Length: 414
Image (cartoon, rainbow, N blue to C red; front, side, top):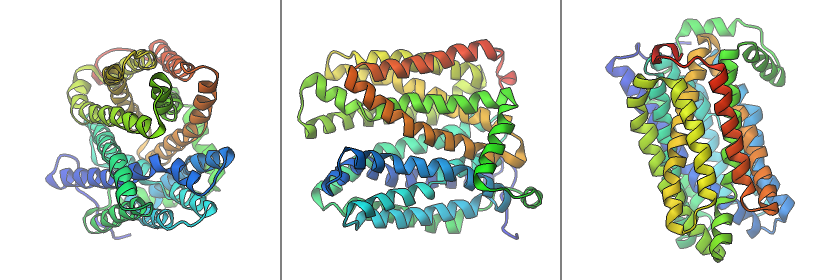
């Protein structure tokens, strides 16, 4: 393969590559953020019942769970660039189908298709691992987290306003347009990050079936405690937070007896505020904290801060208090996400970073299948239960990390 690769870390061309991958994730997540809050509303529009909505809400994550490790493994063989381009092209098609869906089954197909081609984040993380040094790895992952946060902060209001002011087809068309622009920019500006010799070496490795490849990667990771801990922690932190994603609006509606529209608007304002805070933490604060404290200390701190914030959030007495509780909630998430991603990439070998990061993202997708189901079921029993379950999960992670990891200087955190 004659695709030119980027120069080593620290060069101006390398910094340009980091900028391009940031832009790629940012534009993609705007489109993603536009669609996600509308999926349930569109499902009801086409007459879906409770079971249908459950299928519609989970099909994206189910498909992503199965396909993320496949794309990650393939990116180790053919390179990051073609996988990112393919993923963007798939997103354009899936959003187009979503925009002009005329029945519930077509809507499900659009979400399944989107999940199949949702390779952007895991491959972008592998790309970032390729172009950053070990010392700058958490900073690079923090930039991806910041792009995720900015895109997901801007996406929901753009999607809601366009659906209400233009028409139900508008969010899908706008999201597809963002991804098409992204595809064009990436095609001309995104160079390959994985050296040709590593790609050739990986091509020589025996090929296995998709599920077998997933299991093989999981088995290899499970035999390396230092790598397995951040990988499995990613699953549980995602499970914990996804417990709450579907019940935030229900909690606010229940506490203040609001109509659906008003509850959705007020929830959106809180989540937008939380997203902005997350951008500040992952895009700026994490750069200053990692050199001083190291990834391990920051991850442990994040577990305990997030756990306390989850309990505090569920007992907020006023609407304004939700904005205050969102501060430690965003801080905890901002400390956890990039540090776990950095530890996974730093502790995995160069020839299989894509496969390991793909496994991590696949497990995150699986957590997003179980988390909302658990959270909604628990909310039906008692409104505070989802928050208690989530807090308990991350508290346990904090204690496990305290018992398993050596807490010392940043240099030994890797």
